[in-house]
Length: 98
Image (cartoon, rainbow, N blue to C red; front, side, top):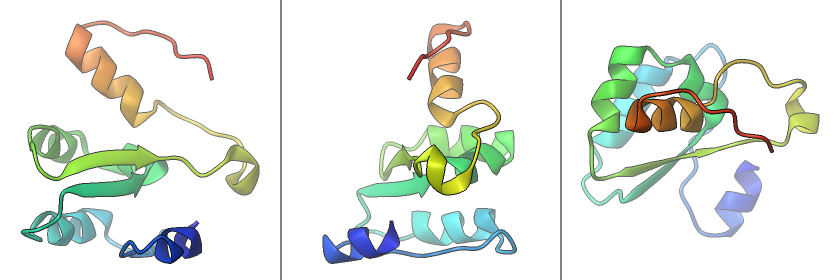
């Protein structure tokens, strides 16, 4: 997917499972002219809850979760970032069918 985003003219930072995602996201959040930050949903799901609460309060940049198609990475597990946001916003769990 990174190649497609680069072809569209966006800056892409590729990470591996060995990288410190919190540190990488903190560096990105310090960029002054960053308006939208797209992050793989699996990375957002792996972030500590206090960190997610802190970045959830930011107006800018808008953090947009993106999902790699399931057939590219295997079976999806866990609760999605969007599901957690909705539960926090409305106060109860809903099931989203895709």
